[in-house]
Image (tube, rainbow, N blue to C red; front, side):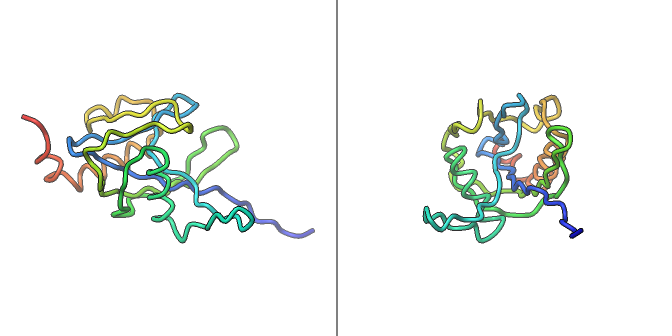
Length: 153
């Protein structure tokens, strides 16, 4: 009997904050809020689809596809395991992002039900995995002087 190691899907997610200090979130089919992002593309030669060269490139592509925002993957924040449905585990890799189009209103793609922009104070009360909440809190803490500069008085 040959050994076949278990394979885990990897999802790359980004914490993107607009010029008003609000984090971008998307509502999924499970009615949970989540960070934008997705899986790395392995490529498809017959269709001409190129593989993603790495996590950062996949994240930039995914956020643009899902929301219309242009970002730069700035800093790796966290990795954690999420079980969205029993028996299905996903490795989540989360980056803090620099938003290159912070004034652009985000759009919602066919992959999600809703798009939202939330303050740091809103996040703890949202229906979403704790791992996302932790990544958001970490990025807000690192950007504190910048985010404070953009808050309206």
